[in-house]
Amino acid sequence: MTNDILVFYLIAFTTIISAILVITMRDIFRCAIALLMMFVAIAAIFITLEAEFIAAVQILVYAGAVVVLILFAIMLTKRDGERDMIPVFRGLVSLLFLLVIMLYVGEMNWWRYAPPMEAEAGSTALIGTLLFSEFVVPFEVISLILLVAMIGAIYMAKKEVAE
Image (cartoon, rainbow, N blue to C red; front, side, top):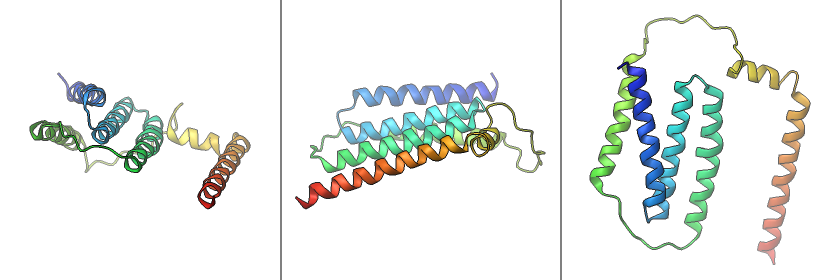
């Protein structure tokens, strides 16, 4: 079994276990942390498939925005302090992450220089080039729509606080 397959199995196992934790744990805060772990593991799968852009979007949108939104919602609501996660399980999960990191670091050739590759279809460089050359107008329109939505949400929130 090659290291790539082993790393894939470890990441898949982490994804499955964290998904099971999301639906079985009683503490909602720990469920959100398990959801974050699942999103990061899915991004790691995208990285192993050499889809760096999709992995970055996965981290930014899901692991960043969605989980932070869920955590803010949890923190702003009342919750009871139930504990159901065993410390041994936390240690095993940490050990699993340590093993994955050690495998990646051990397989990297830090001393070898890799020449720059040409942009392939679906690569981050090609997507960035297309986004700021051929699709610059739709990109700017979407950014303006998001800006207007954000200003409207802030206005509505301040209006409710003032009343």
